[in-house]
Amino acid sequence: MELMRQYVRENSDAAFAALVSRHVNMVYSAALRKTGNPAAAEEITQAVFVILAKKANRLLRHTALSGWLYQAARLTAANFLRTEIRRARLEQEACMQSLSAQTEPEIWPQIGPLLEDAMGQLGEKDRNTLALRFFEGKSFQEIGAAFGVSENAARKRTNYALEKLRNYFSKRGVASTAETIAGAISAHSIQAAPASLAKAATVLALAKGAAASTSTLTLIKGALKIMAWTKAKTAIAAGVVVLLAAGTTPILIKEIQRHTDARPSPVPRTTAVTASIKGQFFGRGQLVDAGNVTPEAAWESRYWARAMGDYDAVIAAAVPQAVATAKDWMGDKATFGARSRKEFATSFEGFQILARKDLAGDKVELKYQFTFANWQQSSPPQQTKIVTMIKVNGAWICSQTRAHDASWDVGSQPEPES
Image (cartoon, rainbow, N blue to C red):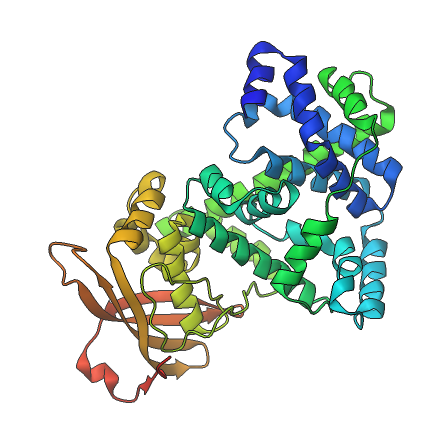
């Protein structure tokens, strides 16, 4: 980022050249994996650094430049292949079927062609984390420093993102472990770019693409459009959540619903369980992201999101009608992360799901207990509550919470002790 500042503020060609030299292998490798064409990968690499030069001023506050460059390379390569994506995916699926019987040491030929699409399914935080860890070789301590979290939190975030990759590959016939996938990516994902590419990309980028060929200029224009659309989709999704939470503009919401009803139902967005959590007691630092395919896992995952200080994940784990209530006790988003991480690191003492009551196939109530030392002056440190969980598109989310009453225990099934 210091090199970026030098380039923006001092128009330092040397600083930009150093940036290109440092990241050219990663960008080239991502483009090469996506296209399988060295010549195309070189052109994509040059286009990415032209885009970097054009957008440099806006990227000064970006958390991880390598993550941004990787995403830019992935999107630019996708744009390059836009007329061949359908054919390429069919070929990849056929390749996966023929390679599915291979042993673990040969996992890279199976996951390599799918890596860019798999990374594209991740959120920005997960993608940046993996880019720092495996494309730049950063330690967990360095990753934690980049995101303002502890080394342990960075390790958990990396493992969480790896588990998502494992699930993606598994659904496409590649059965492996997260550890094996991590080893394969570390060993094979970065390849040396041609010796002259860094210099050529630097010269072209510093000229803002003025000397670029027609095909490269077309590639840059298309990639910028994709980036803008990707950012717009995120903003639109956030805006819809705000509207639903506030209960305003009913006409707009009905219009959104009308268009939604006219489209095919989306594939349920579920996250597989990463650990068995029924009845398990979680103390300080022991919470994990267990997914959302069971009500117990989804509720424990929401506590994990609080422990990580992930404001958006906590909100996403609740129905729109419950968002306003959640925001009341979560407070200001800008300070929530630091406050919540500190609270769970110092005051949190334990969490456990005690019992379950099935009300319907898509509605369950859970009895749970949590303890915070000196949590609130007006509340006891240990509390037992009831949460209502509902199933939406295959994923369990929170509907509401309330205080526990002894009458609730009639007809409930105690969770097994861990």
